[in-house]
Length: 560
Image (cartoon, rainbow, N blue to C red):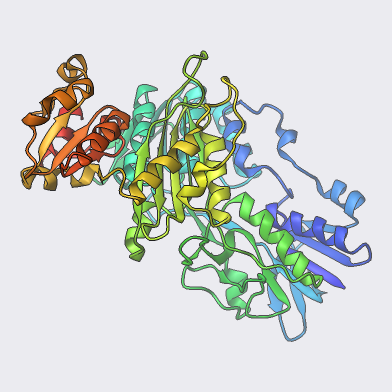
């Protein structure tokens, strides 16, 4: 067997190592057009910011180590230009010498990765404007900062890399402006779950410009003058373009391999392309989303590594299916962490998939133990059978382990009821006896059984217009701090004594701070014949939102 692998990043290097472990006698050739293989791309923003000071630690492996440990013929600075499928050869050029030659293969793995999107705007190639995709890019940025001592930076794009660069440029003492075309950071997430991130950015001195777009750059008097769609201009010393990546499909296209509707290389469940002797993995490949079944390109290191292992297993006859990609992600921005898994609400809406949702605000560990911090969980699930569809978590500590548990639950096909049965590690410094994930299961199960009729923040205005009675069941002291016009205050402890103040011929919406007291009040009212609903997540969820009074209830205007 002669296995040729194109691309030495996370996917390609993993494929080569797996192949050697499965077959000691195969001839394995790995082509990489850059200087490095298997480097820690996700660590590059932190290398730029000085958090990671040892550059060599970013190199998970080297060509020399791969050759000696795995007996893989690694050829860096070498680019595969063509695939001659009928001949089962690839045409290769050595970038340093210009030498062109052909290499035969029995099986071929394409792991070409992706490239940063560079928007077609005037001045985008000026000195001081960068993209970040590999170690060479990071080296150029580090050198520019050392040589020019920039004081003011512009980051274009508020995705994961953009946010990490914002934090690291601030760490270097720069004033940072963040421009995002959409009206939220982290465009893949649901907007209300990104509001705490936006607040954290502003609290740390970041000039956040949402719903804004760069139209041109000019260099004037040593500065980069940036023109914005709104007509505003800003002057900075350097620019980071972080507007996304595009799959490197040129080689596959020129070879006649099928491209999927998402723009990625189309593969089957065994990661074979339209040519059964050619497999594809990583950032350039289109796979089904595990929850929705929609063809997607999800450029993450985790899926790339799993795809590499599965593709090679299939090359060597092990018959392993790729189950799809969940898109589990996490990012820390200053003191706050946000994570997601599965499908977002916006995706479920777009695809017409029925769903229900709940919000809750548990603590990461027992509140009596010092250092407890609150998080917010948004759980999405099927109203028919309770199957978990997705989740988003934002907060301080403990976000990572909650999203990982829910991601595991989705892959296992679990329901919200199953979450209530999970036995998770507990000690006061690590969690609570009823873990945050258990609590999410309880809340969602209550909704599913109609034990807790719920109203969501976006439904409040319609409920108010229908003549519903809005009841704040917090204490008078809490009520006085952010009194909602039109709401009446009946503290939970007084509710049973004051039932005569509430009509049974109108809907009743109750709310508290995080939803727990509202749930208790709803149970009291429903069992006494009232048409009562609880505001999911309480005022804390509503306070995340930045919506106008025209399309929100008086509750929103009271706390926004």
